[in-house]
Length: 203
Image (cartoon, rainbow, N blue to C red; front, side):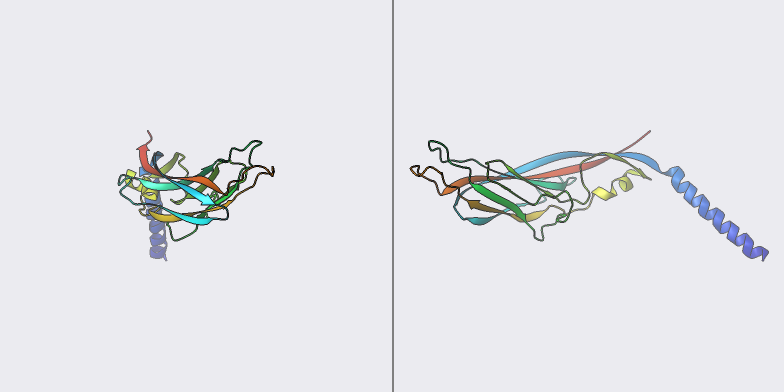
């Protein structure tokens, strides 16, 4: 009985000591992110009723080996090109990022995958690619720099291609005597934002 009791106390003491050592030798690290980006653009002349998919992609050679792609921003812009007397109403444009096997967080809450405009306003879309990335600095407890950064070293997220879908519905002038257009020029800008994570030990 005495031997069993001694063994139990010894095990508890060793475990508590190990936990104490883990806390004792762990440091606080400041995790920050340095971002850089690259943008690809495509200009389309669309006719009334067009429904098209445009492919955009990126490979790992665009950014340095230390960078990971955090998110993708898409801006769809257009203006009414038919400058008739009295004006021609802005056409209706619908845009969306087509969900695919592109490695990203397609179900993230902050995504904006579709949008539309009938007032010539830009359409802004957003897709998170790297899990939980928001670009905000924070502190973490870890034994060393490698462990402090282990959440931000996974490769492959954001590398590949996806489609942006565009639909156009031309709006006709309400003035019968005016010449109406039946097409519109739409520009798509796709920006890939990459980050490099850094860890600095706090004193």
